[in-house]
Length: 308
Image (cartoon, rainbow, N blue to C red; front, side):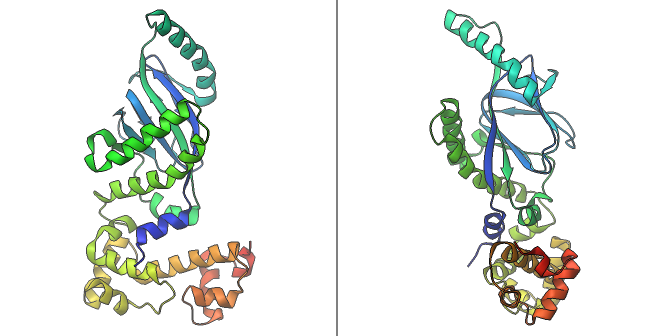
């Protein structure tokens, strides 16, 4: 059976793109501007630093080996100390060339004149927003995954260490490896948040009963789904299922079914040459007319307008 979380993440087509790697010193920090809603992540490979994120209640101390994820790309700063000033990324890169060269030369001579606080690798997660936002919009302003303290994530700590080492050495294919890691980082971020989520799609997927129904739907979205059929998959009465699913999802289960089907339809319209009648059947609509009306009500345009 298709795992619903895996289905959502897979269709979101998450990839990672590195755009910063270097040392942070106690005397300075780097500011990352708002990323147009895109998820940004930081791998703290060595040492410790402080993160200040717009929308978060207080600065956060982050130690190695950790992942810091800013799901909606809010403006934030990473600094070597809590009161260090932060420069815009482009200015920081230019100035740190000289600082890093001075540090390395001094270290080779036997004594450092500046104190390295942390080693950092940062990047952006690109994804299809239609599908990615199903999860991203439910996440908090930032998520901190202290991999060194989480035994079950030891494999991920090893993976990010390896990538950071490859990037630092300029190894061939390092960027491609980081690109592949993007989906894993996003999946683990969502799974980590699911441990505390109380409502929304993420919380619903974690619930054994409602999650079972959503897994069944994602495995076969074109089936003739009704509240009764979903309730049967959940092992609940129709009434109890409808109440529990609606409370968790924040919408009725059939609205979730509708939304997912129409997002699938939009993907098919943009990426395939199938005719509208075939797409309507593939996403569970018995008649093209009903599909066209539902699509226009949801997206504001007829399906033919979203052809790729």
